[in-house]
Amino acid sequence: MKTLLISISFITALHCGVLSAQEVKHSTVNVNSFKSAAEFAAKVELRYESAFDFSEGLAAVMVDDVWGYVDTSGSFVIEPQYDWASPFSESLAYVRKDDKYGYINHHGDIVIDFKFDFASSFSEGMAGFCQGCIVSDYGFPSGGRYGFIDTTGEIVIEPQYEFVMPFHENLAGVMTYKGWGFINRHGDIVIEPQFNRAMNFAGGLAGFMKDGKYGFIDTAGNVVIQPIFDFAGDFSDDLAAVNIGGKLEGLLVPQGGKWGYIDRSGNFVIEADYAQADDFSEGLAAVYKPENILFFIPKIPRMGYIDTSGKTVIKQKYSYARRFSEGLAAVRIGSKYGYIDKNGKLVIKASFDDAWEFRNGRGLVKLNERFGFVDRDGNLRSK
Image 1: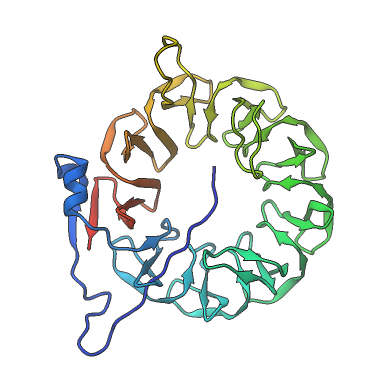
Image 2: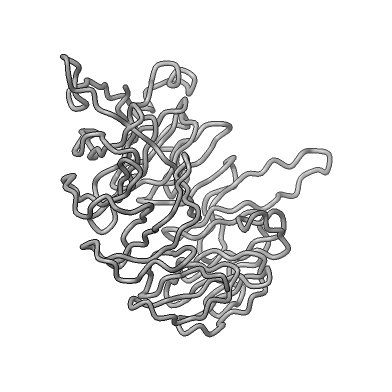
């Protein structure tokens, strides 16, 4: 469930004998070599003030309130110098400097000048941008009008929308005063704005919300699955998680109700018996089903994993469980996160305050309000 974004910064100190970012010495430690999470937390300090997942071999990281990019070895490829930096997508990343956004390549060369009030990642050769936006200290834009540029920075679709989503399967969701609809790459309206909320197309279907209920449309705008659900996730492995009976709070994930999984015809393949259910990833989905225990014993949610047939593959025993990526999943055991494989084996000890999906062989982790990256063997570099 993807998921939403966080911001981070880093700056260089290169003069008067101060070591550059590349020259600073860091030690490598192995999480699994520590006897306890407490010992690990006491002896290890992660390197970054904030960071994003790896993408295309690089990760945006923040040090001393400025952003730069490191490779999977932890070496800086692009020196910290930006007020904000995003993950790479289609060989370009949007970065902010002096309150304006532009785009750089993997070498740090400016490909598209700093001229936008807000920008977004490229998808299918197009990126949304904004004119007249005001960006908060947390990186969230408000106001202004949105359009699209191509990879040369040329405006392809003039800024005219209240908000836009990335292109997927040659269509992009756009918001007008009438609601959400979809346009094609020429800016023509293909599906009239009419929805309270819209999701990206995946496999020819996109979720939408209208009058408080979720359903799915095809690329022509035809309703393929009627809006009868209180929430719906994206289709993945030809299944979508849906909620019945929950109550939405701020158009996010509903509270309460039951979760199950439907196929592309809208039929339940896995019945709505779960209190929590995530999208499928790599053939598995994290779920929680209340267990039958004595009424006087408090129910403590425990998450596990099912396969696409609904069979429990990894037992419910985690305080929280994230999606599988590159064969590993971050799980919370008590108050700490570690990583398991698809057999449910704990391969990286639960030692972190938070942990996310693996990308390019590295998992983004958090400890004591700082961030770092762990490899599949549990190695990471500390400050």
